[in-house]
Image (tube, rainbow over all chains, first blue to last red; front, side):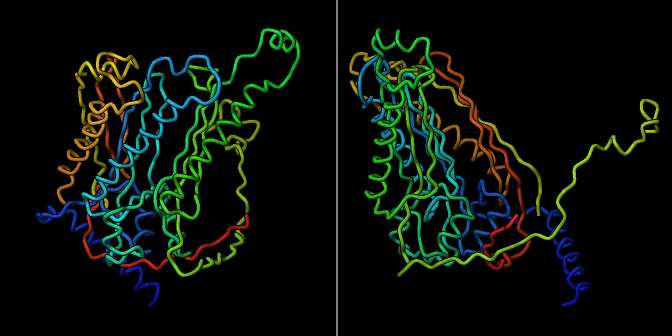
Length: 294
Length: 113
């Protein structure tokens, strides 16, 4: 096809599209698709044989009993339990919404976790998807009964599928640990020096170890062989500086093909010139300062 | 074809039960559990406000599709558990005027720049 014909086709397509806008859409009993995917992502998903279905979300608020954040030693297990319960509840709600629209999974899940003094809020928002052909590597019934949840973008999801892997679900781990008080003597000795506060370092390490272990355990429980796209948040709580929190989450994945298929990327070397940035004002001569033509 | 930018708003007011109040302030009131507990009323309100926003936007779509949707939620806490939750859902309304032309699966590349 020549370029001229291609251009004519695009014009014809645009005209068809414009005509389609001029008339009201025919009444349909089907639910219109809603998704938080960009156009690029939606097209990529289609190219991989999947289609978006609906915007789905799951929210859970779980209470944290009073006194949990007071000074203490070791892990703050009640806060960790509250976090786990909130994540589990939100995931269940998300699964429920996905099943309602007959989705096989949810991609692009945005995870928002807010740890407050008396409650932990978890919000999961993503797009339910299903294979266009109805064929799922896990089997259609199994997929609808237990839809996967992943925080992958459509691009990562497509690459993973191509390599023969499937996401299974979100793997979460959170741990909160007290940074124990320094003794009066230690505090006095450290007062005029730049020294490491080992109580904070140790608390951070303890929280990290525990959270990572929980995340790995939750991935294994889901039948995963690994966790990818792991994100972590860490640091002292804003409302209790003596308590250190570490949260880790990612997507548990499992190999569904017979073996891993290596995705060989092609190397691209851009030959265009580097962008030269300059001040637009510099185009004016020195003499035109203040009274130049505008 | 893109049709319009659409937005829908929904607000839900939570009149907290006494148990919700207890749980949201972390106190162990009469009959309240001693450990972490799911605050069902507030969770349901959060789900409801998002569902309402999606329902409202669906009414505007009239069979078209919505892509690039964003959900913004703001909760104004009036007292423990008593709150107003506002949800704004925005996105691009897109109309399909022909069957989907399959796009070839793109080739993965590594950019040396």
